Structure formats: C-alpha cells, structure tokens
Length: 179
Image (cartoon, rainbow, N blue to C red; front, side, top):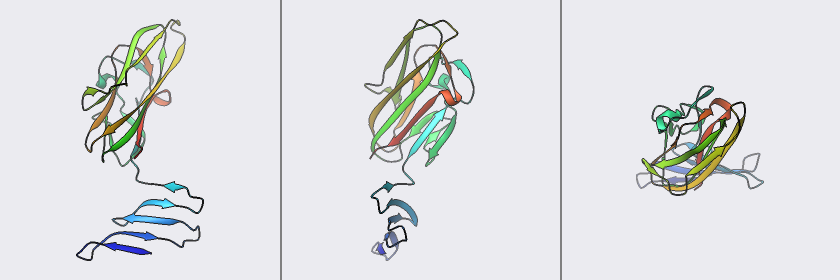
C-alpha cells in the first residue's frame, strides 16, 4: 500500500490494494473512508445518511416542527440526526438530498409541509396537500429537495397545518450527502 504522513511523520492516510477481491481501500485516521472494488463500485461507509420517523401510530401533525415529532431513527450513519432536537446537522459542507414521506387520513384541505434550514424555509421545499376522501381512507404524501449546506447547518421538516398523519413504517424523513 501507499502511506501518507504529515511533516512530523504521523500517518494521515493510506491506500491499500492487492486484496483477494482486487479492491482499493482508502483510509484516514485508521478507518476505511472509501473502497473501489474490481467492478468499479464505490462504497463510502462513513457517508452521512439518516432515516427518521415518529415512533408511534397515527397522530396530529400540529403546526410546528416539534409537533411532527420525528423522534426515532432507522438509520443514522455518523449520528448526525438528533432525535431530541428533531434535526439533521451537516457534518461537512456539501449538497444534500432530503426526502419526506407519510400518509394522511381523511378529508384534508390546505395541508402544507416544508423543510427548514437553520430555522428558515428552504426555497422550493413547500409541498401542498388536499384530499376529499372520507376518514376511512389514507393517502400518501411524498416530496424531496436538494440543498447546499455548510458544516453545522441544520435541516428540519414541519407541517404548517394540522392533519392526521401516521408514523412508524408509514413515515420517513431521510437524507444523505451527495457530495
């Protein structure tokens, strides 16, 4: 492999190659940061990603970020989503993709969902929903947004009108670093 060191001679990274799977592995701080296998597939085990949801069944979305209560995670690579703060905090600057999905019960008019960056609305993140179905029907609501973040910027999702939504497997607020 190839070892990279700083001027004091301390290892800061290395590239390993020649494994039985013909992969190349790139390390920083003694942890694998990137791998390219013989088929050209690139994996980044520390790439920031999360998938949060409300831990529970149907509930009222309320009209604030905290009332959406995305308080549980299925995935939290790097632990950058806070279940207490109900937000994703960017560990590094870059472009991120965020998605929100839930189901809504019954007749709903003028329901809105939007994403917030550092407490301000992310331009292009407003999503509107209306349905005329009776209270025995559930319908899906999904949208996504791309946003450029600086390190320590945070993103949250919130409903701006009250609707009966569902948590657990019927809800997901997720995102990941694109690059």
